[in-house]
Each structure stands twice: as C-alpha cells, then as structure tokens.
Image (cartoon, rainbow, N blue to C red; front, top):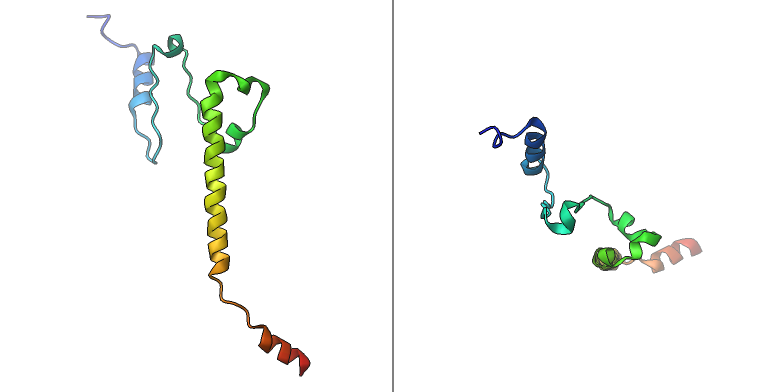
Length: 104
C-alpha cells in the first residue's frame, strides 16, 4: 500500500503535467519510452528555430527546421498579400486637382 502512494515530488509533477493552462496552448506529453525517457520538449519562438547553430544540422532536428522554414515562408506570403491588398484597395489620389492648384 505504501508503494502506491505518491511522494510529494511525483504529485507536483503530475499536477504540472495535467493542469490545463488558462490560454490556448499546444499540449505535448512525450512518451517515456522515447529516447530512453530523456525526451525533452521546449517552447521556442520561430526566430530561434530559424537561427541555425552547428549542432542543429543533425537528423533529429531536420523535420523541425524544415517545418520552421516552410511556416516562415507561409507567414511572409500571407502578410505580403495582406499589405498588397490593403494598398490596392486604397482610393486613388487625384493628381489633376493637385496640378491645377499648383498652377494657380
């Protein structure tokens, strides 16, 4: 019966893992068998993922790097299109009236 009781450290770890955050997040619960239980998940910004280091050329991080590059290109395309559309929808300036005012 004593073996089934969790110590305080294990309880805190379980509460941390299974308490949902207040804001929307992507939840990751890696398998304990992955990489002999030494699997590590960290939160990184897109700019950190795109900032390559010599140790990032290994195969285990290739998929993440590829996803980061493609996601960055998608964001650039979408934001570029939004800027283009906003500029395209602006009303045209009337140059004739400005030219007449300058002549007078």
